[in-house]
Image (tube, rainbow, N blue to C red; front, side, top):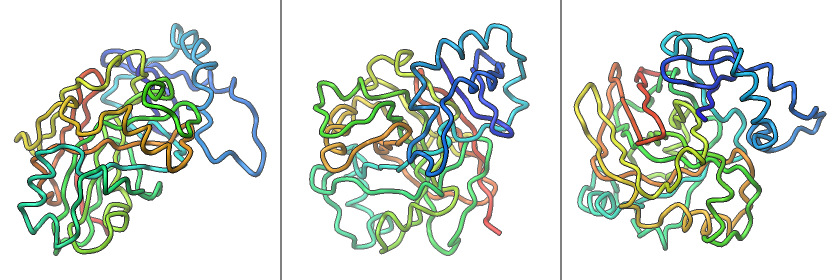
Length: 286
C-alpha cells in the first residue's frame, strides 16, 4: 500500500496516477485528550486501521496525483534519526574534500553513531526546500527513510524489520560548515519525506533497492542499499540500543557518494526502487 498525506491533511491511497481519498477511515482512530501522545497516532494504529482504509479505497473519490500537494506522509514523528557516512564511497569523498568536512572529525558510522534532526525541519514532496545561508554550500543527500511502526527498544537485528511500518524517499539537506551536524541539518524544510509511505509488505528486503537523485535532469547520485555499511536491521538494532523508537519515528539510513550543492530554482528528482519517486523544488528562504 502507498499511503499519502495531501492538501489540507487529507489521507489517500496512491494507485498508479490517482489518489483515493480515504480520510473518512481515520474516524476509526482512538480519541485522544491532552496530553497528546508523543508518537504518530496513524502509524501506531496502521495495522488495525488498514482493513478500514482498504474498504474505504474501493469507493473513494479519486483525484489525479499531479493535482494534489503532497505533505510528509508522517505527520507527527517523535524524532528524526539520521545515520552519517553509511556508504563507504561517501565516507571516502567526505574525507577527501575539505568543502565537505570543514576539519570536523569524520569517523566511520560504528564510531560516529547517529545524529538527530529537528522535527520542525520536515516537509513533503509538494513543499519547496527553502535555502538559507546562501554564502555557504547547501547540499542534497538522497536516502532511504525507514518509518518505525512499533515501539522498539534494544531490538535485535533479527527482529528489527518487524518493527518497520514502511519506507519513504528521504532528502537530508545540509549546510556545510564547522558546526555540529544537528544544527546544519535541522533548518526548516531541510528534511524531506515522500512522496508517500510504501508499507513494508510491498518492499520486502530493503537491502537491495536502487536509489538515484538528479538535479535539473542531471544524475548526481546513483547507488543501491546493498552498499550500506550498516544495513537496516543493524541500524535499528544500534539506534534502539540508545533510545526507544516509537511509531512514526523516522530513520534516515545514509546517503551514497555524489553529494553536491543546490541553488535556488533547482529541481530535485529523487527515486528509490519500489518505494517511489518525487520532484522537489528549491527556493530561497524569505
